Amino acid sequence: MLHHVELWVPDLPRATESWQWLLAALGYTPYQEWSDGRSWRSGRTYVVLEQSPALTADRHDRCRPGLNHLAFHVDGRARLDELVGEAAAYGWTLLFPDRHPHAGGDEHYAAYLEDRDGFEVELVASTPQDLPPAT
Image 1 (cartoon, rainbow, N blue to C red):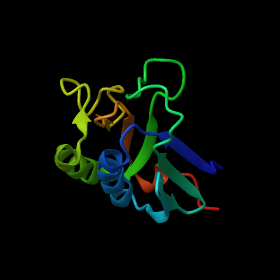
Image 2: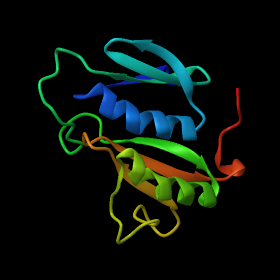
Image 3: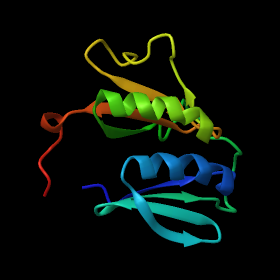
Image 4: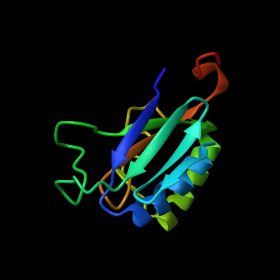
């Protein structure tokens, strides 16, 4: 089981605006807050945003070695469509709009969003039978 993911962001308030909305919409709740960071938790897993003074760039590049994107389950197609409709108001841009919602293939209903700092998320429409049993 994944413990946590930590994303170093160049502008914490800007990143918080985008990620707070998205993570809350996906069922995550605020977990920790300190001067240079925030985190949100779902079950035993949490996502951290931190503006570290050790940053060496001012934008994430998902095409370089390292993290390409985070993928999240979304409860069905209708909910995914709602999130896509709201995303721009929180700084997210729909990637591959000409192929949306099947940019990942004909059988894959998903949205690919990028925030203002270059981080990508994939929202995958899932049904209960798609999800592993809770432990």
